[in-house]
Amino acid sequence: MTRRYAAWLYLAPALALLITFTYVPVANMVVYSFTSWDGLDVTMDPVGLDNYVRVFTDERYWRVFLISGYYFVASFAQIAIALYFAVILSFNTRFRNLFKGILFFPYLLNGVAVGFVFLYLFQPDGTLDTVLRWAGLGDQTHYWLGDPDIANISLAGTSVWRFTGLSFVLFLGAIQSIPGEIYEAAEIDGAGDWHKFRHIIVPGIRRIISLSFILAISGSLSVFEIPFIMTGGANGTRTFVVQAYETAFQFRQIGLASAMAVVLLLIVLLITWIQRRLVPDEEVTLS
Image (cartoon, rainbow, N blue to C red; front, side, top):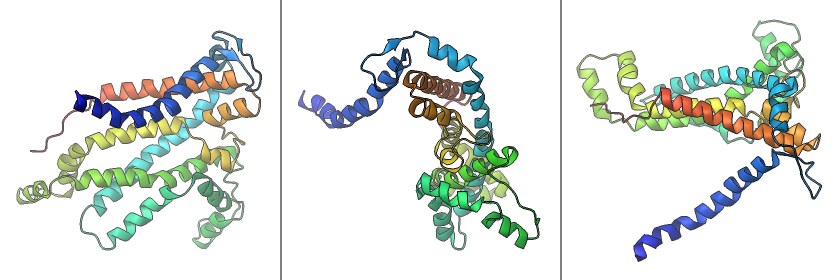
């Protein structure tokens, strides 16, 4: 009996923190979403489903979801780049530890710092334009963040630079966990690099690839730091989370912003469930 309760005693601190800082705030958010509250008044006026109806019918709130498409496409480029370098650096490569550090370093930086660094990089006639002139790729001034046609592409590229390191580390750890004997057996059978990648590496890291897609989808829908710091949502770069932030803290519509957050949470959960149904978490065997 003592051992039975001992496990719960060890879990109690973690469960208390999880409930206090995750589930209780989520429950409060759901309650707020059914009210009209400015975050300051003592009383909250119930409005039923009006906030949810407004989220889905007001063009200002649902059109910003389309901006997530830029980050969604960029996330696939991020996964491809990370997987490419993870495969190469998993084997004997000169200076591979140096390259590992270079690839992972951007993820260690604070999002605000990354935003300010790239803000100066994308300035008209700034660093990027200067490098392009040196490379002979054009001599005109580009408005990387001021032109609505390319602003979101610039921001999505910044996101790729920052988060590729996370996907790289996940892939690298998964690939290195595959027993070396399997590669040796494949070489004896005459398998080339492509066959090793297709029949050994990809099946061996299927779970990590699945996790990366989940992170990519949820991350593309909840982008906040980079567009908020670099453009403030101007020039057609306002994402759903930036819109929710402005609704809550600029326009003092806490109830409506809570409804937007609940909708985002439900969409992420739904997409994750669909993805898990399409790609079930099966046991991976390479033997």
